Length: 107
Image (tube, rainbow, N blue to C red; front, side, top):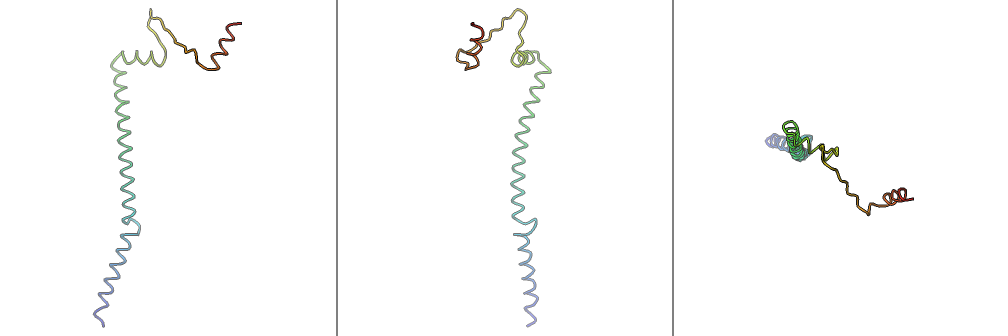
């Protein structure tokens, strides 16, 4: 009768450890959730690294070349060189605001 007590005690300890492994804090479920979070963070880091690389290349272009500065001044600020003529093309179907402007000009 005394021989089965140590075996039963070891079996009970094994079951308790298995339960903690599968369902307890820091168990398998939590480890899988953490692995998913790590993978999401790696993807986000890769996306941000690409963005940083593009911004670094743009900064380098702006530091090294006048062409990039000139292109930016033309596109964002509407600047022109001396002697150039700037043309603005206005579409005739610009909407109700354009028809109101035309009515004010033609009395």
